Image (cartoon, rainbow, N blue to C red; front, top):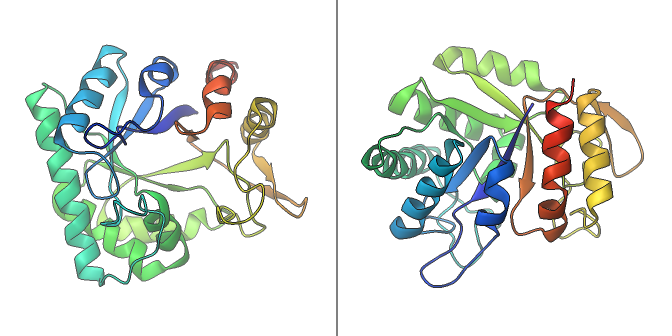
Length: 243
């Protein structure tokens, strides 16, 4: 499994996250594209930082919600979603090309990610966007017990899926992430985070109710605005490369 993190989420002079601190431990960087966070200058800075550490770059499109950091659901039409994903992905790809590199995947951000995992029409509109733009790009989605269902949808659009597990988030019994408004939805201790990664390697996660459910993931995500995740990053990377 590869380690990824949501990156490049500063906006103008306002800093967000700990990109320089965490980037050396990553395999993949999910770079914000300007709708929920970031701007062209910060996107370019983050691309250069990823290249410095040979980290794979993915587009991290979200709802047009700078005030809410993309963590609020928005009533957008499916066609609007498709065009927003293409727009944001294309913007980041242009900056990547100016730096002599390319995107390799797309991972929706925040509430757009949550909404698509509960709405087949929405996730299909994003698959269509990726297929229309560049079907060579992988599509990163949350690893849930419904992974085969999503695989069948993706086959219609000729795109490959990457399944992601979240090291620093609490899970519900359906394999979805517990909403952030719920107490303890975000793990705030490095030991808890690394223990959850150990479970991922064994193919399961323990949910909020204490239930053990199957999780088969290609990659693991941490969040750069969570200090406990940053502290745990070296140990997580060591766990992931250990046979």
